[in-house]
Image (cartoon, rainbow, N blue to C red; front, top):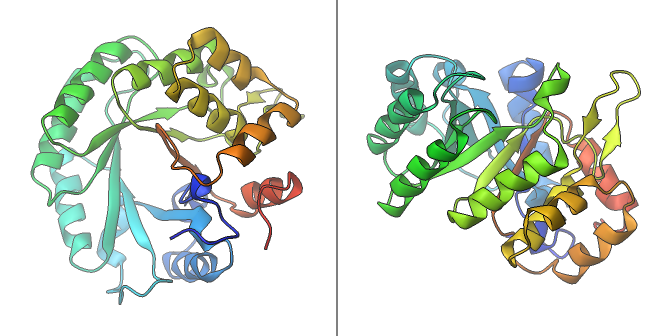
Length: 281
């Protein structure tokens, strides 16, 4: 449960992607993740995200508070992915699984059908379908909403950053996706690129990164019925002042719509939240 230092609104906001993003050794990653979970900000930290191919190397964990819950990201075919998840579930707690269902420009429906079939064969483990922000997005969200309404624990995941400018959606594009999920009662995750609390331009690449505090306030607004234009305005903000107060006012509430994001360096989000006065040891 969140502590007084970590309000409910921030509970499990940031998944630990140190291993999947940076290629750190598994034993080292597990030890570091235990340290994070045992720290005063432990309630901020979500699951340890690993590629599914690492499942075979996982040790059997006791399930103590400081032990990680694991999220597995598919890096193989559907059948191999399903076997990896089942094997890992015998040794650790599996919080959720994730899989990209298509590349940009591809029809997401075939890959989405494969993932839904895998999830139906798993013991009630939630899953995230990573859907490209291109053609076929809305129909894929409809398919996810239908599966969720039928009782399958599935949600969406969107990539909002990368090594090319076109991988960074504009505030209007992201706002439209947030509202589309809201209208379908779908929760979602975001990855990668949310390195800072507030929207900013990377001085080295020139890419404009979304801020995780922007996304949080935008989803709060969307959940209360805001339309795309208002949500986009919040996502485009570069001044933290108008973002901090809505978060502070609702800090004891559950987080609507957005399940969070992954970070390979938890110190970044933690530092920003402390500097903005939203977390204190």
